[in-house]
Every structure is written in structure tokens, then in C-alpha cells.
Length: 456
Ligand SMILES: [Zn+2]
Ligand SMILES: [Zn+2]
Image: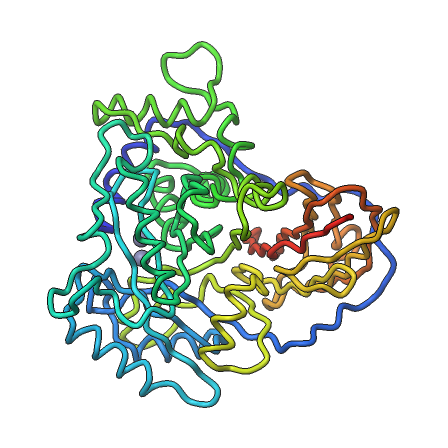
């Protein structure tokens, strides 16, 4: 599946011309010093990776070694369930239990794998479900075999979106959590998923790889990679970004450039973010919760989606934990981990850590504000990786940039904390995006989950 994805992606990107993202430090304000005390302890987990049971190269024991080398306390292993037999599933359950110990938790999950559209991906991870088999276990039928998600020749998202909803309904009926993977902005509210991957390392690497192959610079390649694979976050804002495109006298929106590129190459255009899913940025999905369109918010996560789990001499040859989530838990147990994931008490990251509350309410929670009241945003951010400093912190309020802070201007710093005060007049949310950088120009990212505010 990875090979097909690579082949399609490289062709599509070949026709789209450069966009580069630069972080430009500038002058801005900062709040007064304060500290955000978290009542939970912070652990890290990665919840998307493959073993030799599907298209990964490694074992549960190898995954554990890499996870521990990268400072993770928990992993959820998610092989493609169509590749799993009942025996293989049972062996995964047994092996994850066997490697778990007081400081480390390995849990069995699975990936439901739908159509291989180029941008609109019908892939979902299921967590905390007893097994992946719908109905009689002996038949070994995975959700996508019972409710199919065939390729849609029109390139406009799934042919049967109602079947993706059925996957989620099945996961929920088993008491589980449903995560939409590498969404490229295609998440529809009707699916009812709990989480979306706002960052998927495997897909970022793929696009970076194609773009490098085509001769783009590191910065340009990373710009492409983050745009296409972080699409859950950047959504509508970047779909209309103008890019030069062969045959057009002036630059055209990225969305159209990708459509024309794939149409020229495959005869069938593929849309980045389905036109049938206008709510295709994370902020729009969050606003749908704020305005009462849906009953539960969709939280953001980052995962490695590591396939190279079978390292040979050094556990760090595997990508497990390169992207991960900081999770605030009361204890390192499966129940507590699932509870915290469901509550959104977490941030997605490739490096920096975030502690963030509003009037004492944690990420994923709601602060109830009296009329004429104010929100105290308590924020504490650390770069966490040696040599990295905090380049930029952006706080988003109801989908818009509310405040931008450049902690390392003029003096480079790996840590920042402040209490920022805002007067609240309407229901909404705040969330935090962090960029850290090292002297070589590499950067790392973190995205907090939102804290909602509610006014009478
Ligand atoms: Zn996938
Ligand atoms: Zn995967």
C-alpha cells in the first residue's frame, strides 16, 4: 500500500510547482509570567504502526525497544485488519500483554483500510475494540469487507460515505475509539470519528521524498509535505493558496493544481479534500461542535504510522515515536490512556511539549465563563529537543489566529510560559500551535487540543 501511495503521489506532485514555508521571526508581545500546573502526569504515546502481521517490518518487541528509546510510555499497534487472521490477532493481544510492564504499555489496535484514493483516504484506526472481526470471529471479516469503501473514480471522496460511518458505529458499538488517519482534509462530520491525525509522519516523509526526488530544496519539500499531510489543520486556508501551474498564465489555487495534475496523469482528477466534505479543516470540525452541529468534538493526534518497525542494529532506525502525543493521565493503565485520548487531554507533537489550560480547565475540557468574564490562558511550552529553541507560538481562537508569539526574539530560548487574558463574549475555543527550530534550520511542531469556552 505504501508503494502504490508513493507511485501515485510522486506523479501528482510532479506537476505542481514550488511553495515554500519560512518562519520569519518578528516582534510581538508576551504575557506576564505564570505557570500552568497540570494535575495529571505527562506521558507520551504513538498509536499508529505496523508489524509483520501486515505491511510493517518488525515485531512487538522491536516496537517496544524503539518506543522506549524515544521516551514513549505507551504504543497502540495498528496492523491493517484485512491482513489479520484470528490467530494473528490473538498473538498480537498476547504479545502486547507480555511486553507491558509497570513503566510501559503496549496495546492492540487495528487499521480499517478503505479505498486508495490519492488524497481522500478511507483509513481509520480502531482502539480499545476486543477484536477486528465483525460478526462470527471465525469468518475473519474486517469492517471494510462488510461495508466496502471501493475507489471512487470521480475522486471526490468515498463512493459510499455511509459505509465509513458504519465502521465508526461498529467501533463505538464495541466500546472503542475511532481515529481518521492521514485525512488530507477529507473528514466528514457524518463519520462520527473521535480523532483525526493532524500529523502523520509516514505521509509527511513520503511527500518530502517525492519533492526531493524532483529537485526541490529541503525547505520547499518540507513545505509541500506539511501542506499536503497536515491538511486537517491547514484546511481551507491552504487549499486556495495560489501556485504556478503549466498552461495557466497566472497562479491557480493548489486544490485545482492537484486536480488538473492528477487528471492529466490518470485521466481522473483527484480532489484534495473532498468537495462533498466542505467541513474539511480541523477548525471547521471544531466550530461544528461549538455551534452545536455535533455533540462531541473531534480531537487531533499525531502518529508515526511507522512501517519500518523492524530495525536491525539500532532501535532508532525505526520511526516509532518520531511523531507522538503528550497525554495527561492519572495512571499508566489501558483504561486511563483510553479515557485521556477520548477526553482530548493531549497535544500532538514531533518535539515540543505543551501545558495549556483556560481558567484551570485542561485541553479537551470546557471553561464556563460568566457574562462579561474573561479567559485566563495559562500556557507553558518547552522545545524539549537538545539544540532546539521556540521559534513561534500561535494561539488560535475559533479558527482564527488570535495571538502570535516569537519567544526567541531577540534572545533564543527553549522555554516559554505566560498567562494571556482575553475577554470572552461568545462560545468558542482556543488551541495552540508551536514551532521549534534548531541552528541547522530543522523544525519540529506541536498542536494542542482545544480548550472550549462557554458563555451563558
Ligand atoms: Zn493508512
Ligand atoms: Zn497505517
